[in-house]
Length: 324
Image (tube, rainbow, N blue to C red; front, side, top):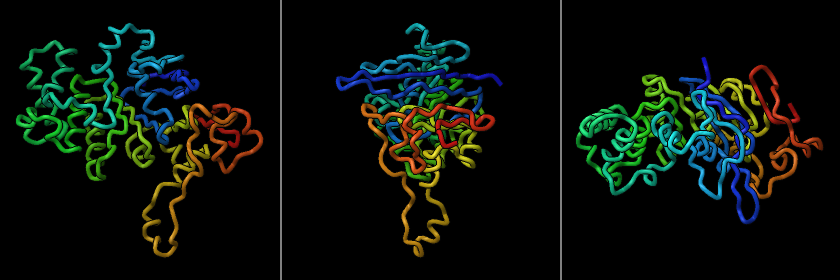
């Protein structure tokens, strides 16, 4: 199966008065048509900047400083503004982290769903309205004909997120970017939203780029995964390989920090805490030389003062570490 998206050596930098922050620094990955790809890491590692770069939504002082983003065989970084507007919201759509700040409070849900359809599809206002009602039904909102006239503040958090998904899917995109789509939702609604995205992926045959800090979500919902740290990809393979045999100490630390049922069952006996990765993610304006993870790594050696190569440690499994 051919690749729908190829990100090649992408660099997105922010030119600040204090220096250059390399939010995304020379990363590469691919997504095949119809596949789900996970991008995982702590806050501030560059996940959302990667998504905004793909959407060509980076604003000054940020800039895409290098690389290629090849979508459907064409490098969209070399596309004109008009060409990218035709792609954005039509062929590539994005669900943003917080629906209340992404939805316009002064327009109804129906107005906001039909807007993209009127721009990208050659349909009448009535046809767009009917399709918007169908989209609300598709994402599981009851009484869709009534709800389409509601304003965002009249909906719960879970329903607002469903509206965001309806907007993103209104033009049947080839690629859906979901940036922390379950942030601030309780676990029951989180499960429903992720199940909805997976169901719609199967029905519509679209690819999904799922951005999250939660390896548990990645395990259940993606085919391949890249682990990001301080602007770089440090591990990349199938979900099965990364979760069963992690080859970078940062990935190992993330996995060890996940709670398990056995932890809960034995909590009264062991009175212990969850394992945590020591230290914090380095500031992008004050990155350590050599391996970016060395200030937190339990395996640190002298060689880690040199930048490790991103190498294939086994077939289809890549890691950026001297210790593998």
